[in-house]
Image 1 (tube, one colour):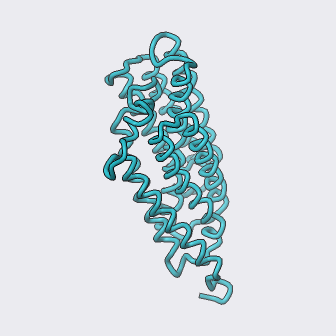
Image 2 (cartoon, helix red, strand yellow):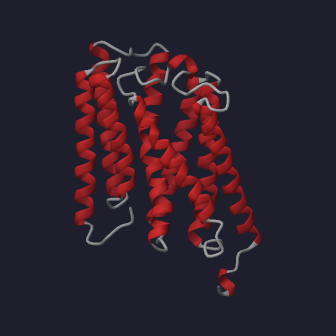
Image 3 (tube, one colour):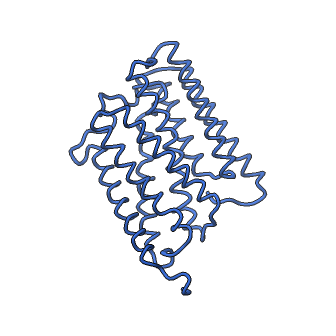
Length: 269
């Protein structure tokens, strides 16, 4: 390692902040799962975020993706602590944003557990904004190999795509909970189709901005497909919403692959 690459005290502080934030996020995930005595997210806030709360809520199994995301986040916290990574420009640019995303993740769980649904919208929108910033930073940063591409780009790409879906579900649940709109009926179907169309537009925008990155597409489409599963076979049936969710997923997949194939070079997933 050259003198220019020698980790500074600021690097060590940043590494520690990221690692501690990852631990706090992991603790929050245990609370959110009900494993640590907390209320499961699906049951918190009067069930406002359950799989049948609104026509755009993903079915229960969709949330298994959090296990993959948390694994990636812990892997990133360890990765950025390695001697070879300590002084990399990538982590210097990314570190505190990553820590912010981890802390906002834990904060969102606590806010929902407290039944503060409107405040949870504020938190998740902030989380989405932070992840969007990370996405922009990664777009202009070279990865240092396959491991870095998976642990850094892959993890935060999955994180961003899923939080896009979660934000849609959270905002819709808060609106319904505030008496704006309803969870069922013709009006709800129309609202769901419009919201899912917006989700598709967001997915296409991510594909274009990210030059066809695969990870955001995978998690976003995972969420959309599970929205469709819930509307076709869950407690809250809505065929229009189910069809719209599937169409949105197909649009995002096609857009991502088209951008990737026409980019003229291989991009990190």
